[in-house]
Amino acid sequence: MIVAGKRSTKLAFLANSAIALQYIIIALLILLPVVWMVTSSFKPSAEVTRYPPALFFEPIFDNYVRLFDTLPYALYTMNSVIVAGGSTVFGLLLAVPAAFAVSWYKSNWPASVSLIARMAPGGLYLLPWYIIFNGMGLQGSYIALILTHTVITMPITLWIMSSFFDGIPRDVLECGLVDGMNLMGVIRRIAIPLAAPGMVVSVILTFILSWNYFLFALVLSDIGTTPLTVAAFRFVGEGVTDWGMLMAAATVLALPPLVLAFLVQRWLVHGLTFGAVKG
Amino acid sequence: MSAPTNIAGRSRNPFVRFFTSPFVWLVAPAATFLVLMIAFPLGYVLFMSTQDYLIGLQGRPVGLQNYVDMLQDRVFWIGLRVTFSLYFMSLIAQLLIGLWVAMMLNRAFVGARGLRTILLSPLAMPPVAVGMMWLILLDPAFGPVEYLLEVLGLPEMLFLASPSQVVPTLAAIDTWQYTPLIVIILLGGLQSLPEDPYQAAIIDGATAVQRFFRITLPLLRPAIVTAAVLRSIDLLRFFDTIYITTQGGPGSASTTLNIYAYKSGFVFFHMGYASALMIALFLIVLVIVLLLSRLRRMGQ
Image (cartoon, rainbow over all chains, first blue to last red; front, side, top):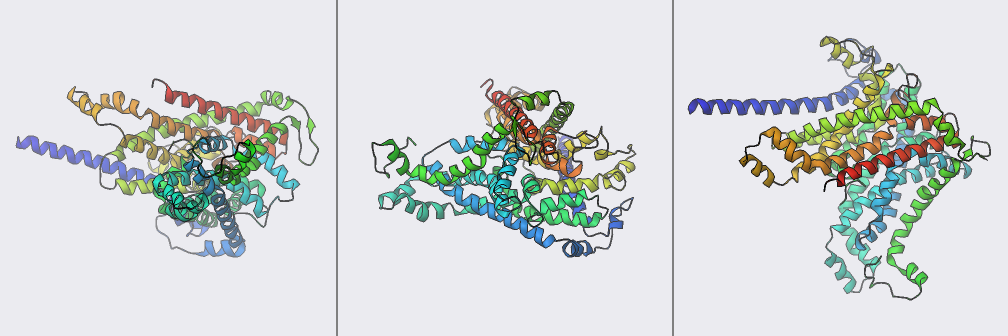
């Protein structure tokens, strides 16, 4: 019996080690590439292209200094903030009342509309938009970028906010009606305050997705309104040899969404799966 | 809208009823936006696809000529092949790895929460940054992955620079970024599985392998299909990472349908032809999603 007991603890130990080992491998597979990108941004270019690669090096900030000094990266960053921020706010303004209506009247159409909007390749909208915005003289303007990015932010906000409104007990809202408030009053004084956490989640999530979105700005931005995604693409396209600076550009682009995603962990997946999972 | 509206005064006139309904007022801004930004452009792109439309020139109606040209266009068929090989490679890899990781995370174990957090980070990264990151990781001259291959005694690879390796490489990059999404969806599915069938199976003496194939997999099917639908939508329209790393090259080895349509429209400015290509791609996504949705309902 004692022998058997010993063997089983040994087996359990082996099994646990196997799981732990798999955990470590997966964590490393995900983290190491990102770590490599970030550390490369602190290396002189000669160090980045050194073969075999060295693990230890003296970190420098030169890449970031040059990125913001020799290239208009301050402008690009500001453009990204304007477009992502603008489309987030505009999407919120459009989606909150609609989300309340959808939740209150138990309507189903946003799920269907969102799913169809989601299935179409971005280019399908981009072709007519390009012609329309050109015709209106809006090509390259913040307005065009914010409007097009709102196509991404609005359905997701609608999706998230309606599930937050669904979470408010109907009695609470009907109480307001009985007390003589009209529907607008109920929305303003009861529903919106109660669903405020949902608005925070929506804002953070849609800001991330709008910040990350590449295709629309690739066509619709000009020199003055180029966001970070498109700037990074041009940087690669010029056939760079300045790899350290390129990785600094990638880090500047990737860091804000990574930090924000940390704040909305669970909801990140909810936002990314919208349209496909009901409820 | 059939829900009781004790708020709006009831009127017999359907127009008055429509315009005094709070539902209509609340939904109007969002609906107007969707009509202007999605419905109208969709109609317009259908019209464009029947035009010989070079930017700067007035369009000329050509009927279905763009679609006929498309079927005779060699690059269209290459694009179709590239799109589907990228799709199948990525989807299969992601479902298998995703299932494995989800099963592992489903067991209570120290660090499972931490690993979940780590898993979310690729999902939040801009595909543009992910493409740039892999560009240096996979560089044939100095990339650390190349060094790893050398240390392990494996043959050198060209990755994104090789016409035969570029599609599997892009599939691997996408797998790195989006498998976590599948893991999280499947984990949700696993955690809502009922206990009873498992207890019955253990009493009947079923092995772990039998339990996995006879119970877990069938019960998990809705979650698997959901994950597959989501990934299919994005994979069939694969664009960002390719456009950053190879722009469809070398040659046309990684020119997916989406890349080809984009280039036709915004590099060569054949807007009419590009519209036809985009519509074809949209229809392909639609058909695949419908087929997968049938799979979910099958046998239930």
